[in-house]
Image (cartoon, rainbow, N blue to C red):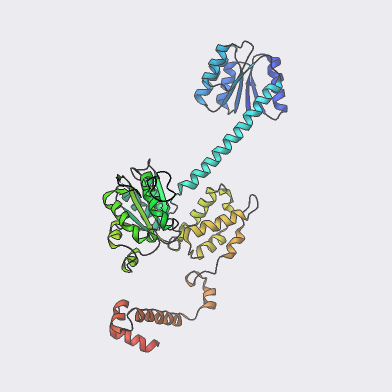
Amino acid sequence: MKILLIEDEKITRITLSNTLKKEGYQVVSSATGQDGLDQFHRDKFDIVITDLRLPKTNGLEILKSIKETAPNCIVIIMTAYATVETAVEALKIGAYDYLTKPFSPDRLLSMLDRIRRLREVVDENRRLRKRMERIEQKTIVGNSPPMRKLLETVKVVAQNDYTVLLQGESGTGKEVIARALHTYSRRRNKPFVPINCAVIPESLLESELFGHEKGAFSGAINQHIGYFERANGGTIFLDDIDDFPLPLQVKLLRVLQEREFVRVGGHKSISVDVRIVCATKIDLRAKVDAKLFREDLFYRLNIIPLKIPPLRERKEDIPLLVEYFLEKRGVKDRANFLTPELYARLMQYNWPGNVRELENIVERMIALSELGTLDTDVLQSLPEPDFADLPQEKAAQKYPSYAEFMKQKEREIIRWAMDQAQNNVSRAAQLLGLPRSTLRSKMKKLF
C-alpha cells in the first residue's frame, strides 16, 4: 500500500516514515498541508496519515479535499489536542480513525494491518461480484451475419409485449436471447423469471407456476406464490415448452389469453402483467400434428417466432465466444495459447452441442491447465471433422470420386422421397421438385 504522511514535526515525520518503510509500505512525506495536497493530486495513494494542526492548511481541510476527489481513500488523523468535538467532526467528514499523540508505532501498524486485511476482503468481494455479474449477464456474443440479424430483430421485438417463441437446438443460447428480450424491453427493471418445464415433475408444475393455497393438498402447510406471480411486471421465460404436460396446457392458454389464473386449491382469479417468452428445441408444429400439443396454444405461443442459428451456421463467432468464456472465468490472458491452427481445429468441428458444448470445452481446458497456461490437448478429443470441413488431401483418402459421391447422395434422397410417398412415384417427384419422367429416369440409372 502507498501512504502519504503529512506531519510538520520533523523528528516525528522521519521516525514514522522509517518505521512504515521497514514494514514494507511505500511512503511519501510532506511537512505542510498544502505540500501534502499537491503531492496527493500528483500521485495516487491508498492511505493518508495527516496531523490535525498544520501550517496554513489543517488536517480537517485536507480530509475534506481528499474525500471530495477520492472518496475511497482512507484518511487517519493524528493530533496532540484531541477533543470529542474534533474527533466526531473528523469521523463525520469521513476519517477512518484518529490517533492521539503520543502514540506507539505498534498502534499505527496494527491499524494499518486491519486496513490492509479489510482492503483484501473488499477487493476480493469486488472481483467475485464482477465475475458473478459476467456469469449472470449471459451476453449475446457474435458478429456473424445471422447473429447481427437476430440481435437487430430482438431489439425491435423487445419494444412490444407480444409473446415470443424461440426455436433452436439444445445449447444454442435460447435463455440468452430471452434475457436480451427482457433487457431491451420497458420491463428491464422488473423480474426476469426463467423456468425449465422439462426439469419440474408434472405433479409439481402447476403448483410451481401458479402457486397453491394453504391446505390445497397434503403437505401444503403454507400458501405458495408461483412463478407467474413472482414475475409480475416483468418477463417469464418458459424453456422447453415442448415438454409442457398436455393436461396443464389449458390453464397456460388461459393465462396467455386473459393474463389471470387461480392458485391450486383456490377460488380467486389473480391477474398478472407479464411478458411471456417460450422456447422449444424441436418443431412444435410437428408435435401439434401428432396431437401431443394443443393447436390453439401453439398459435398463441407462435405470435412472434425467432429462430436461433446453430453454432455450425455461425462458426466465425467461435473465436469471440472462446475469448468471452475465458474472460468470464477471469483468465482472458490465456487466449494467447490458442494458435491459428487450434482455432482452425475448433472451426472444423460442427458442434452438435452448439455454444454449450464449446463452453464446456473451454472450461475443460481451463480446469486441466496449470497456473498461467491453457491445456489445448483437450481439443484432440474432438471427433474428426465432417466431409465439408476436411482438407482436400484427407477428403481424397476418405471419400470416393465426386461423381460416385453424388450418385450415392442421389440414391439416398430418392430412397427418402419414396419412403415418404409410400412408393408413389408421382408424390415422390412432387417432394423432390422433379418431373415424374425425370425421377423415373434417375431411378432406372441409379438402382
